[in-house]
Length: 275
Image 1 (cartoon, rainbow, N blue to C red):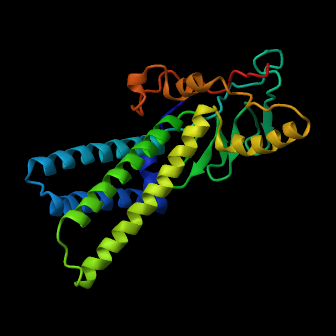
Image 2 (image 1 turned 90 degrees about the horizontal axis):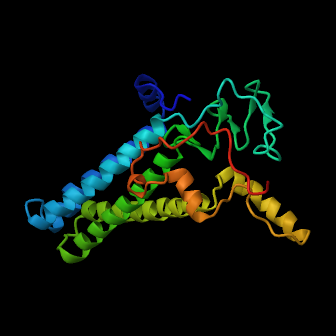
């Protein structure tokens, strides 16, 4: 399975996506304002403490940007051309492969057709406009690492902003100074809330080996199970530890590396706990 789109294709996608350009612009503006405005005004970049904070924050932003590029450039997972459902395989019994009328091919379990990308995506979670790409089997790890780094960066920037606001003098009689700080506070609070909530949501999904699409399907399944007096368990849930390892890998030291995805298979078969 080709897991990475070409550099030219990724660049073309970036230039053709206003949302992706906006996301990169927010990262660049947030980095500049945090380091060269708030941090410089609070501690000064020439001081040891100021330089240390600048280096640490720069590392977080660089990691976020790199994982962002990986998630945007990575092929989320295409159905292999040679794929065909095997009804006799016990691993796929009860997980019927479906036929996609739009792609004119069979699609494995957990695969869905994306109307935006106009193709089937393995273990599709959702289409993300900010990376101009689907989030699926092959790029879910860099996506969640990007969200993690973005949350850490937003919280870090908020701490620097608050310390600068409370511990240094500001002339808020000047209108533009007041407006800048109000806007910065609103933006940082919004980023912490939205990205932090997104991180918590995907950690929950990862711990249950579930996608956003499957969660929506599970809501009705839980209701039907409860109505019939049965207990519901997601059919791909292998336990928290194994669920995390299936997405992040078995090597803990490689969990934060978005390119360490050599453990991934072809994405057409998944162990079913209901078998």
